[in-house]
Image 1: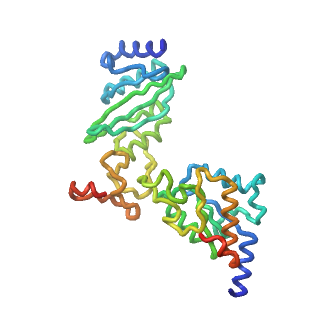
Image 2: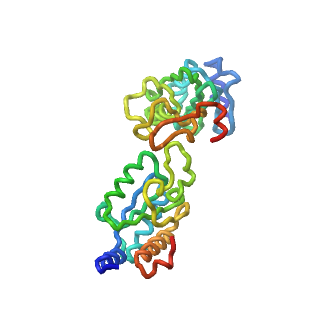
Image 3: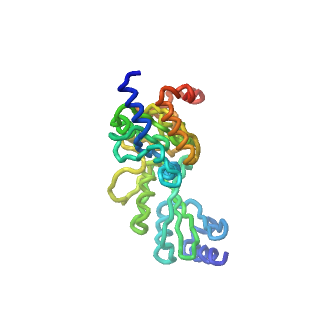
Length: 170
Length: 151
């Protein structure tokens, strides 16, 4: 646990806002709290440039009610995985693409665009992934308010019930 | 039964050609299907040859739950096959949708798109089950044995 604690100490010294928002979950796993866009970009750039977190394993999207969460999993050469969390409001889900630092994240960020409706700025032009062709715009299937039972797969239209009282019937 | 139909049934029964299509499987059932065709289990001993083109095939072996993206392709492959044609749904996902049923981009089992003759459940299916399914399908083509296996 020595190496994990050293990373946390170094990060807290550099970024005072991380105090009490970062902890060791277990051996080789460090979790952070939700950071806003500006804080997140400072931290991830420092981790990439100065602290040897050279590899991004994965990006996880989460639905946090009013907000969308994005968890970036970064690894260094000792095999320590740092879960860095970013948060953006659903009304304005803009985040910046990290493909400049980690080119392998392109597919993961396209998934955030298709499945969660995030607006990833700076993502290279390309096809939509992974939803099928002809998927209607504005339908984000991994958001909690989107229910698969209201989606007609033959006509590719989303038909939610008009009254809130009807929800229990389905 | 007319003589011509008898001759066609005899030929189909003796040397059916199959085509294998993955409609959205995790590849577990595909590995087992290939395993059934290769010399250890040797599906070829009952006259089966795998074909690359649906236009030359008699039996479609379909694995995996059908997704919205593969639905049209599966229909096209089925339409291209000449009559008489048969479909075997291999794996739990191909039979009913399996754990993917109800997912936002999954139509369901193979029978939600095309008619299916034989269902082979299992996750993943054993090669012996595939061989048994093919043999039972071939037996149904033979009119005399049709009563034996009601499907």
